[in-house]
Image (cartoon, rainbow, N blue to C red; front, side, top):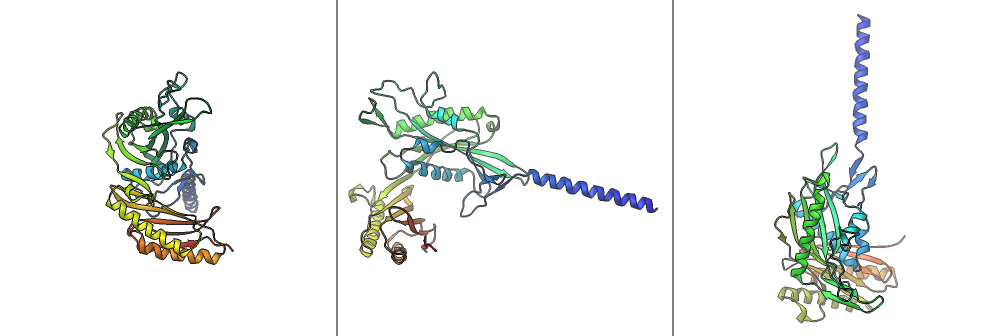
Length: 369
């Protein structure tokens, strides 16, 4: 009897040990986690303790002479993604299916050596065909069932040039070809179908929804970036109907009140001009006070303001920052997100900001110990 009990105890202990070991093995196989989220932003993927970077990391930086285009492109693409893949239900992952060499070949001109080029052959050097497709970015959207990540959708942003700069002779003068809105849209939709067809050839992307969004590149000398103007959600091999987007970005203050497109623009410009005047009167030697204002469906949806000056003491920075917060609440529009960066020529020194729907401006001064 004692022997039987001993055998049962031994078998039970062995069984428990096997379950524990199996459980440990299962947990150790989960080599990913997420960054966490907040304020309506996506969680990002961490794999083996490191952030999972894009397979084509840095390609868009190399493609852009106007870095504002890159920033607007990336942030705008995420906003398009939120229309289809809610941050409440999906996890963001940097693009894993388009690598650097693939995008470099797609962004180049089509030729015998590069049949994958999305841009037309050059043609005559004295009158070349424009390069229409300027940048491409992939974003992947995942779900987590507690044991593994699963791809649930892909978003592709395609940046289309609104103008094309070229030289007829090496080191010669530069010329510019304007690309009309209609032609820009036509070329963007042609590129979108080619991209969708190529993506569907990848085993992992045969059946997932693929969203393609089209972005209008701002000119190289623009003080603001471009904006997305259409997107399409596709479950098959053919691009389905397009959803139009109405985003515009402009610089404030306008050089002339006559440049305002409508009465709302004019009011926004006047409010910002009053804000600028107040802080210029308070503090001497301001080098510049400008704003990037974004409009969605004709309504002001956000502002990024930059104030550049030279401070001589930390107390000056503190007093000026406090005054800007007061002036911003009095003169700037309510209800929209606003950030005000206060900087010298060499570094940022303070920030004043307000979230969407809030009436309170918060301040943070970059002090030193």
